[in-house]
Length: 245
Length: 295
Ligand SMILES: Nc1ncnc2c1ncn2[C@@H]1O[C@H](COP(=O)(O)OP(=O)(O)OP(=O)(O)O)[C@@H](O)[C@H]1O
Ligand SMILES: [Mg+2]
Image 1 (cartoon, rainbow over the protein chains, first blue to last red):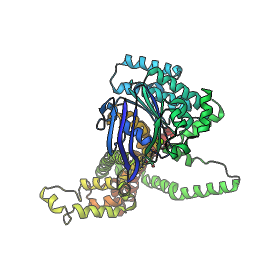
Image 2 (image 1 turned 180 degrees about the horizontal axis):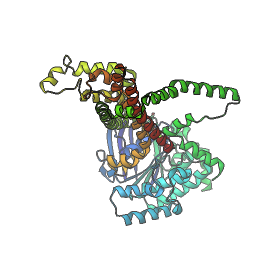
Image 3 (image 1 turned 135 degrees about the horizontal axis):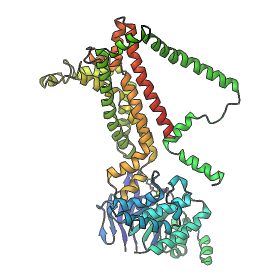
Image 4 (image 1 turned 180 degrees about the vertical axis):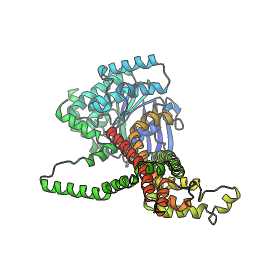
């Protein structure tokens, strides 16, 4: 397992956002955290990234306990729910930021930025500012920025939430391909079951701060283990979906 | 770019506090009744004329009523220059202190959550709601001979009340919410995401401030500084109480004007006033440039 959460609990002002959360994600896999709004998905992601601290439990990355390690030392790339692009920097500067902070050489930064712009097919848009981009383009920049320092683990919070349905479908196929190409272990948050089922190797269903079920998309569709999962997953839709695949 | 997406960009641009505030000034639509429009224009112009334009003209006319030489004499007078110097000193001190304090306080209150956040924000606003005269008295009661820290200060030979430090303290006090008030909504609207993203990439606090926070707040900051300057220069009440009106020592320009006026030295009083007016106009111009740049 590359990432492991062991008995994680987290409360915000007396509100339990995570209750004894346990799961693991294997190296190179793409896992989806799927659950209704407010079920604690973002909270889990933020704890893995070191943006929030769990009240108890252990977070392991590559076998080492990272609870006390600052987020910047965990080898993580993070794509925020609304991308959080640096609005006063160009696309190229956004992507370069993480490398500059690491004091990489100018030449190295330049070639890495060009490589990533190529990867996201935005070679000519490096000089634009975030507000001059479409939603999908912003999403790709956020992705490139997170990947720039070569993280071992990529965390994405609702990467497609702000994008309209049609582009969304294209983008998620694109993202899946990218992640495979780069070979980075990834966890993404979504409340769209179709998205989770179609893209992820493994799905973690959350509900009211708890993990309800963990499994491959097929397992979850065909063998829901709790009443909640049974209700939450629209099985018929997935049989149809699987048939297409 | 299609017309529709262009619209979307525009609304997004106004999503932060800064732009949406400016939006309020621009009228969203024309009223269908021109009579009302002209009536309102008339009322505003009349009001401004009575309250602002005529008094300013009076200042100018009176300042020069005894001719250029008399004006020059009043302005170049030793005590006037000393008062001008003290006004500038107090203003610069207030601006420096309140800018630093304002940035820290706005950063704290907009980016961190803790108990008593609201109480702290309210405390910062106190100088807005307290009469400056009372503020001056409070300082006298705290630092004066009969005050609370009086014995301590006397023992260490530190003079605050009826001295320059008191004037500076009072000026800082009455102006300290200005920078904070301008910065806070802008920082609040920015949210924490960009800063968290930068921190995750390993940027330290100073780099984050310089490259992420500062570009976002710079115009608001400048605007706050300008408002603070304007208020600091004109402060009368608190300074009047705490200064003791020692001519050439603790008199600021507004106090000096009052003294001259009370001595029936009207021409000189208006001449010195005109200095304040000139400073005010300079600030007004700066303010407009900043507002224009902010867009
Ligand atoms: N900083 C915070 N302070 C207080 N409560 C919080 C905080 N962050 C999250 N919560 C609460 O914890 C619960 C879980 O929040 P979380 O953001 O993890 O949900 P989510 O599954 O990501 O939901 P969504 O799909 O709407 O993004 C929510 O009820 C939320 O109100
Ligand atoms: Mg969320």
